[in-house]
Image 1 (cartoon, one colour):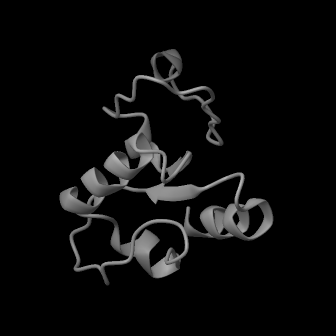
Image 2: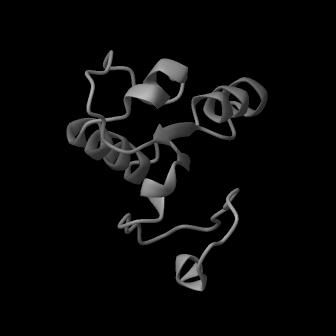
Image 3: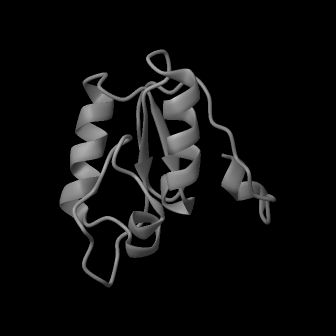
Length: 98
């Protein structure tokens, strides 16, 4: 996820303003969220609930216009106005596409 955010940031700024949104961690994170500070350490550590809420709030405010998510993005994330969802995983169940 962090690698995708970095690629989008470096090749498509300022049109695409990506942020990563990943599941909660069991280990302590280094506090890095969002687009410019994302790295593989953040992917491995995950995000706590406060960080997730902050990213969603910033997405709603237009600070970010793309969320790059792990499966947590399809499991309970309810965002009213989304133009496009791209899934890079094989659909194991038709329910995942609803």
